[in-house]
Length: 227
Image (cartoon, rainbow, N blue to C red):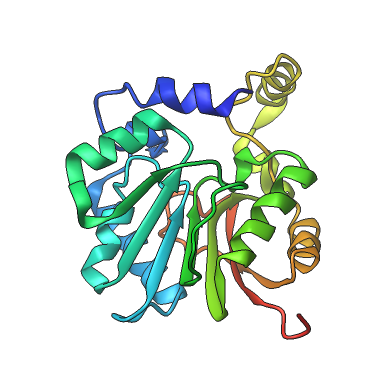
């Protein structure tokens, strides 16, 4: 799947949350749910008013902008020029927006906190995922925190793909490069990649109210003390 092409096309949808795939049971996610997610992120990252935050794979900034109320200096990165253009047009210089690849962007600073939400499934190979994790580690302060949220769980794949026909459709779409769900990650395998990147990860089960809690998990990460 060409994910940049996919998200550039998706960006053309009318509703800003549909443009970034915030769909729950066939309907666009509610604004209330997104606000609750932002509050949970701030809690999970222990965000403080003086912290600097980097939002990677920020999309059109609908979630990013909600984190501003916690008083943070925020930079944001996404590889879709159309989504970044939408973010800049709607929210201006409240956020420092950048169009760049998650595995290749370079800033001349490190951040207190880094967020990568609802996007890790699109790094489908171990090599690509490791490159992203290493880049995040390079941009994280020694005592900083990373939250990778809403990761599809390979152990719960059958909850998402229910029944024979759903699984067959998944296999077919994967075969022809049209599977828009990306990769369901094995927790142990992902934690191993974190260690290779010099990071220590902790897999967290999502709370019941979270829109995709039935088949996703979050990952809280800090730099390894051994590095």
